Length: 319
Image 1: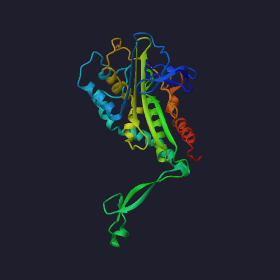
Image 2: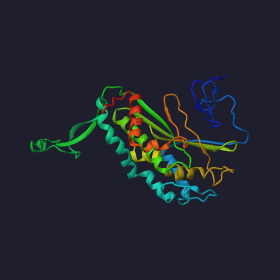
Image 3: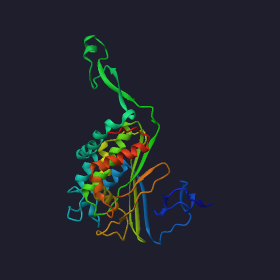
């Protein structure tokens, strides 16, 4: 039985987007919504894959040990290919730990955290027998068996602490986009996630690399970087959202393992915006036709973060 779509989404079969009112059905083994009749041309290669973080790294690692006719992921940087790293191996290491990315997020977070007002999530402390954050000297002198101060949890403001934030971030973009813009945008998005967490919100983050060539092939990789209730490394989050190598090294490395006869080293496809699921916020790609430098303006980036925090019901103080 077919019906009209209430929300825009992406068909899992053909990876083409549909708009509100498009005729769709629900079926298949996973009971997923899809086009009633897929519009993709006959013979088009369509690949859709979902990954956890560890599955994504494992997929990248397969490329490190194999040969391929396609080699953009291992190419040295040049004027047209600016991945921010010299090798795929270097990018793979930064995916585990990227100190500059942590500093990038801290630049936004440290400025805005004092403005979270009553929504701030404060640490709660207790005492233990094992070493922790420090020792309470008076308790130690008094002979207390539990003189060590440890963090037992957080006291969260009752202001909408049950609210959630689910972001689906477009990870693909044009080769013309300067790496500095990619980093500034991703840093702001990662800071939004971190500040929402500090304010007591449950956070889920997906990054979607969707690209293709019309009538030939289409790939869509979705990586779950963080799920509700999960504590993840800030470095992991900011690398995938902000480092140019997340696309130009890691994503390309996975794509080079696919059986796509029409894939060429001159083009790995045109980027496609992520589409929000019900309950999620989709962050589109940066269009070079707009002014991408707005992300490099710290005041504009901060204003964007504050706007999103307020949409979550988080109290953000004025200056």
